[in-house]
Structure formats: structure tokens, C-alpha cells
Length: 380
Image (cartoon, rainbow, N blue to C red; front, side, top):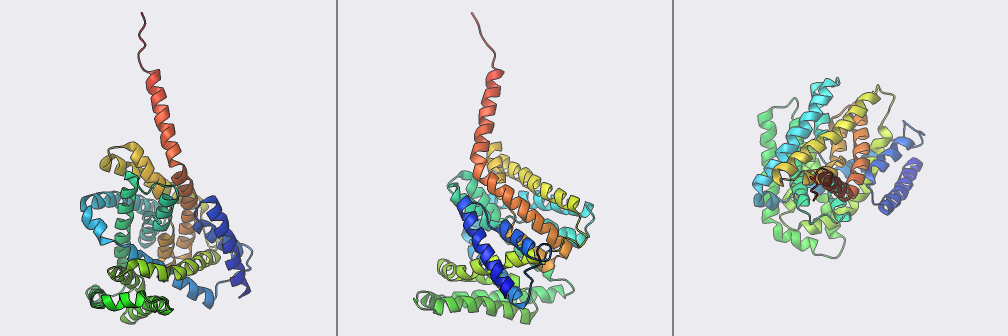
């Protein structure tokens, strides 16, 4: 318990520092776990209590993802969502899978690395757009479309990775029936749910907490991934009053997710055959792949390389979902590789998002100077 308290206190300090500097706290939570855990000082250890809270953090993160799945965004701009999403999927996941496989990972490990490689941190992206006052820019809309597409792809990835050694027809039939039941309850119980959420006592918070845990337990009982069902729960309840559910679930998500990141770092062991040259290559390619996909989106969707630069600058950060995939399906080596990638891309992404306007101005200024230098001079 002492180690648990130390970890929470360190996270509080790091959260204050990150807010003051306007940079993401996630990589620093992971680093804190690494320093305090088995790879560092060894004063904090993972136990049943920390594992429980970490699992709660993951579940509420996925529940929030479901609440954020706004289908109207896709319906309003289906072609642009599809185009931007497919560019990112093809480029980022293609480069990630190819690199991981050529670097010696197995096919399954390469797929997990590629999936973690592909999924942008929605929380970091939206936070940076808001804090840097870019939410009204034309590129921001494209960035949000891409993150929505990534969320949908993540659901498919979770379903694929969870279907190992099962009768696929029965597996997906159970998922479809569970989804139908969940959406039916949300549709016919909409007025009842809203009446609970409008109360000013503890009932809305208890109901939200119980709904997430009950759904996860129900999924385990049916033999289907609880991660997928919790996302579906969020998407189903988003048809009622998503703002209220976000308000009541946010305290659980924020606190438990910090614990999840810290104890993810605590469990990392650098003595388990980690090749730092491979990690370095993965980190560099993770940044480069987003540059390629961002530039393609800018040129195809906005007819502008500068727009592509803006998209790249705001989508470099990988985070919570990449780590979730590594935790659920990856080996210790995969977890360490993904953790390093998340730390590097989060820090780099924080600065590129913050200073992308300066980069664009510098490129424009350089282009103008170059044009003036090559302009023919006329004399009398």
C-alpha cells in the first residue's frame, strides 16, 4: 500500500507540472512507473489492488471512447472520413507491420505493433487542438474524422484479436446478440436512463459505474471481449444523454487511468531481451509514417502540403489505446517497445502540435525568400 500511495503522490506532482507546461502527462506517468518499478528503484510493485484499479482505468477509457463515437460525424462526411481514414490505415499500419516483421517480430507480434503504431491518442489530439486554439481550423475537422475512423478500426482490431481459438461464427453471433440487446435496452429505456441522470444525488454516479462493470462481467460470462462490449455500451448510451454519462464517468476514468499508466510502467522490465536499436527504429518510423500519411491527407483533401504538415504535427502522439493493445495482447517485449514509442511520440507530438504554426510560417517565409532570390531583375 505504501508504494501505491507513493505512486499516486508522484503522479499528482507530474500532473501539476504537465498542466503548467501544457504538455501531455501520459508519457511522464509511464516514466514515473518505470523509475519507481522493477526497471528502476524497485519501491513500487504491482499487486491485486493496483491490477484492479488499472483494469478499471482501461474499462472506463474504452467506455469514454464509445461515448465519443458520434455516428452523425460519419454520416455527414462519409467520403472524407473514409478517404482520410484509409490513408492513415494503409500508410501507418502498413509501415508499422512491415517494419516490425522485418525487425524480427512474429506475424501476430507485428500485427499488434502495427495496430499500436496506427492508433493516434484521441485524448492528446483533442486536448492539443483545444489548448492550442486550433479547433476551428480546417485541418482540425480532418484530424477529428481520422480519429473517429481509427476508433472504428480499433473495434475491429479488438474483435479480431479476441477471436483466437474460437468458433468464429458462434463468436460473432454472440457479439451481435449482445450488441442488439444493449442497443435495445438503450432505445426502450432512454427515458428511464435520462430520469436517473437528471437526479442530483449519488444515483447517477452509481448507475454509471455499475453499468460499466456489469457489462464487462456479462461479456466475460458470454466469452466475448469485455473491451469491445464496454465500447459498445458507451456508443449505445451515447444515444441517450452522452454529456451526462461523461460527467459522471470522468472522475473514475481520470483517476483509474493514471493508475493504469503508472503501473504499466511499473511492470516494464528492460532486462527481458529488449533491443534498443529496434525500439529506436520503431520510434523514428512512427513519427515518419504520420508525416507521410499527414502530407497525403493534406494534398488529397485540402490540396495543400502545409495542411498536411498541420495534420502530421497534431497526430504524432500515440497513447492510451496503443498501450491498451500491448497490455491485453502483447508480450513483455511488445509492451516495452510500445511504451517507448508512446513516450517518444507523445513528447515529440506535444511540441509539434504546439509549434506547428511557427513551422508553417517558417516554411512560408523561406519559400518567399527563395522566390525573391530567383526573381529576374530588370534594369534600365
